[in-house]
Image (cartoon, rainbow, N blue to C red; front, top):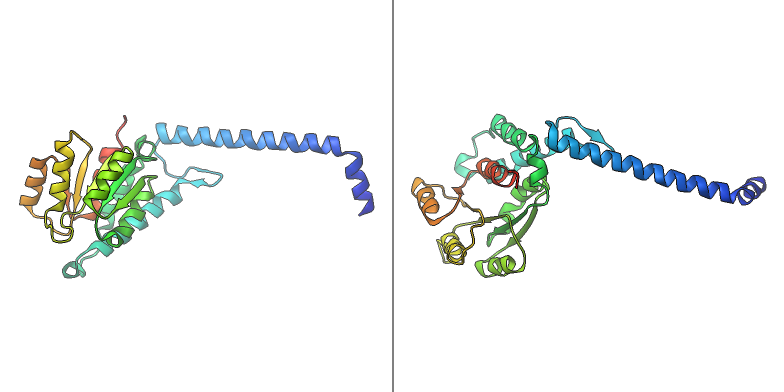
Length: 226
């Protein structure tokens, strides 16, 4: 042990140089990995890229499982006997991982307004698999405050809050009257044809109670190139 200590002390300058070189090499490797990652995101379909901690096959499967879990949990008791539509979910997730889409999704900001946020926990988990920044608030007032504080790329709102059975439409009117054209999705437990028509008339881009349709439209709107 004493011989090792003497050796280290005698060759300390050389060892420090070696440590510095190792640090530089490590940095270069990570920069190369980042460059490869960005190339894969922009120019090719991501299927099995694995560089350091990045494994897109795992990411894709995790997104698939999260979406399926959220879809199953969202089904009403009356539909409990229905099976989760796995082929449809997989097709939706595949579209999210097509060239450029995932890259455009990462970092986009979503404001989710719902007075019962616990019901959206699994849906949020699924959407966060695509790198989305989701802020959740329980009321129109807090939503307007959040919109005044920062920019959002998409708003998702429930319909009924408290005694107001059309709070989602009221919130949408506030936004459109104020000149905001931010994409607006209504995600509620009810999905009637007249609700969809009215939502479109009022300036919403979607009104649905279908979890997979919601995820698909998030990809369609936020995955576009700027």
